[in-house]
Image (cartoon, helix red, strand yellow):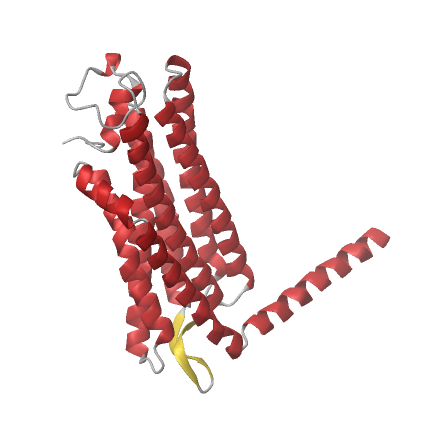
Length: 317
């Protein structure tokens, strides 16, 4: 009986705390201050670009123009447009309703493009160390189809339940959303599942190859990148799920923007780092990204020749 009373008290306390928290963060003064967070996010992205511009120029001029490089450029430069749209949405003093609707739509589409491009780069890494296996490709296509079906349904429901307004509070203009359903958090759960699948495929093949080719240092770097990216993705998605479940829509928007920007920064930094490591330290007898020019038979292909497709021709001609 005492246990039941304690549990009931704890539940009521948690519900009361969450309700109070939601009221506090919905305060218009607090919502206005989120503009500072968006400005800081844009500033950090610009700062990261400036301090890595020398690496950027070396990579763009020195690497081969293939599919993965185009995906890299999407992750590198589309965030500028994405953050510009966010800045316009949050800093505009007297936005019209149509302007708010357009900016929110652009945010959604650009964010999807960035995330899909980032995930595609990491799938390309996995695909090439599996010697461009059609079985792995079709497994991934089927799983993505199964994941996209509920995601599309959830997003349709989300859009139907969300109302975009051009006021933050009474007498306070600004773009905001109301009526957002928490069902959208399942989209991020499904994203974690997709990232976990890519990570498991990478680890399985990497372990098998490492047993045969223990000098594959670039392979070790690639696996470290994938694990770190997965952990960051899970962490940011977890924070976003909590934000959607507890906080008002304006706060989940902020966390989502941070997640997308961090994903883009991580994947571009890791891609350049792997390319540079290969150029500086890879040897002819180890895992490499650039020495593959004439495809060798799959049976005799080493890790080195297989993963060269990552930067050269990951999906074939």
